[in-house]
Length: 136
Image 1 (cartoon, rainbow, N blue to C red):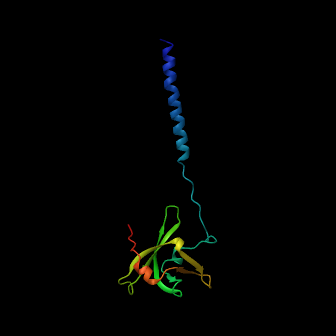
Image 2: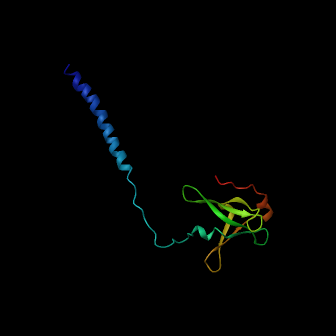
Image 3: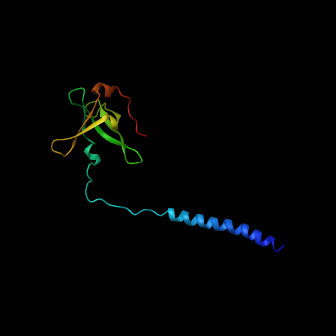
């Protein structure tokens, strides 16, 4: 019987040791990284207000204003996937929201370097006919 006890004890000790080691490594990976901070806008970046409120112009209608950017759709990685544009209507009445995919837009720095000219290869009628974007 003395032979069985060490075998049973060894069978229980090894898994307990493995469990404890696994818990220690899990604790090590749950530490959070400390925040970092910016003191100025990094090069080749811009703030959301450089887009929201701006007019979207049509490249097929001689740069005519065809809608206003009202919101941005951003994925969990922080990338802009689309801009929400208010089109149609008058002074906001009868306006509908559509979402234009980010890759469909062309951003050009304005001459004064302060903002962007935003254009899309679509007509005003095409945007008015586009399916409405419904925010969840």
